Length: 120
View 1: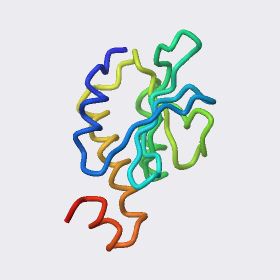
View 2 (view 1 turned 90 degrees about the vertical axis):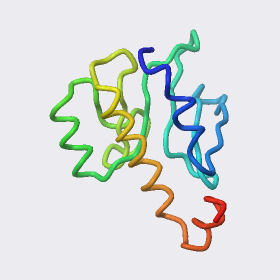
View 3 (view 1 turned 180 degrees about the horizontal axis):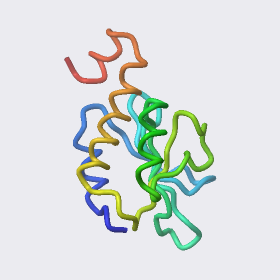
View 4 (view 1 turned 180 degrees about the vertical axis):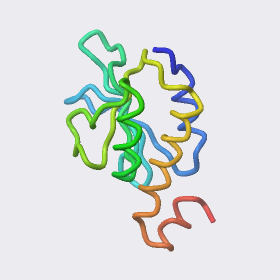
């Protein structure tokens, strides 16, 4: 996988936890128990998709620009997108997409819960 920085990048965000969803063989990144990103592993435990949430219009646009971004693998195809881990999506774009996914899920909580999750 060319994006070997993902784990460190996501775990530095406030309130993020990580687990392995063994039934799916996905490494999930969550805030407040809600997933905002996942690294989907194959039978050899190698990444084959990075899945994240985006606003539908942005996801559509990015999928039209990059062949390595597809509708979410095993997820709602409107809100979720998957990135091929050995593809040509620039690192900075993937970081921006992951940031937006984190913010989207965080904004789904009440203001009080957001403050709690962020330690404010």
